[in-house]
Image (cartoon, rainbow, N blue to C red; front, side, top):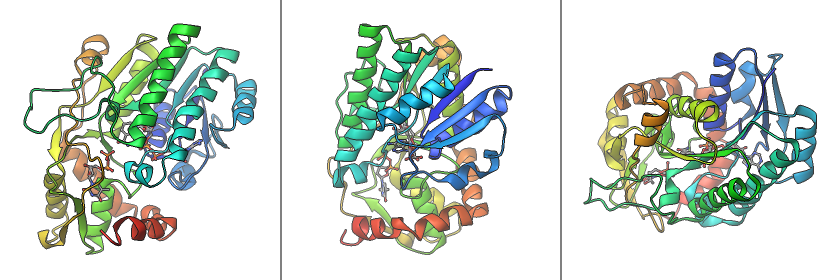
Length: 340
Ligand code: NAD
Ligand code: TYD
């Protein structure tokens, strides 16, 4: 039986990836290692907890002994690392934990992979490692050859981890791959990120805080399409390679916010322009030619359809996110937006 170790599987993309694996490979064993930080939510995995071929382990990738003990016990063939601190605004407030989890956590996992041997270690990275692109040069896109040029402590920690993965490939021959994806949206995304935050605020008739002028551009991909791309890279992608993942779906923040309001039949007077994020990246845009050429991957979900599905999901799962917005998140929201 093939064993997959998925770290950070109680978070947004990791949980969607676990659901994908369980459906696609019903014979496989899936082990999820997650520290359950504020961003990890065990209720997300409630529907699969009782499956015989699924195991949840609470633990941190920064706990080297625990990581090695888990490898000793489970001997995974495939390791997919989603575990990370992921929110740029939190990284601006307190960068330390981003360096510990995102860099040293990755090192621990790779050292365990070297000791126990794996078919593949896959590092889930982000297009943010490339820095940003100008708004007035639409022809410019990030390719796998674009130099790393991180702007925030979050993206710097992800870039550092990417460099470490490449160093382990070259120095120790670790069979590792890296994917750099654009912004994801879909079910189970923590409501501190743009799309779920705006849905939650609109539903509560609260102001929708748009940073700066709202002209910053992100390249949006439905989470299920990201999961399929990682599956392909894991099994058919070349070790030692980087693959960009994105769907040519660039949108200005303000246009996304307006669409959400329109879908929910809410007034645009809820839009409130607030102080810009420090170091705010202007534009991200992925060139996905390599993954298309080598692995035949293409996004399947159009943005209008994906956004509608996402909004429907948040409407149908109020209990999931209302629990979150009433907890630690409330204090965070006050700190982040109170004086803005
Ligand atoms: P998320 O914040 O929703 O989830 C992160 C998960 O990691 C949580 O379950 C959390 O409990 C867990 N975690 C945090 N620290 C840990 C630790 N020390 N040990 C074990 N688990 C820990 O994040 P996400 O949006 O699902 O992102 C997953 C990965 O994908 C990240 O590596 C991120 O950099 C990358 N990524 C995200 C996006 C996006 O748009 N969300 C885009 C591209 C890449
Ligand atoms: P976010 O979801 O935090 O993702 P990232 O910064 O990693 O791309 O933010 C997406 C965009 O939305 C980004 O340009 C910042 C902007 N934004 C707002 O305007 N208001 C908000 O309240 C948030 C959370 C983000």
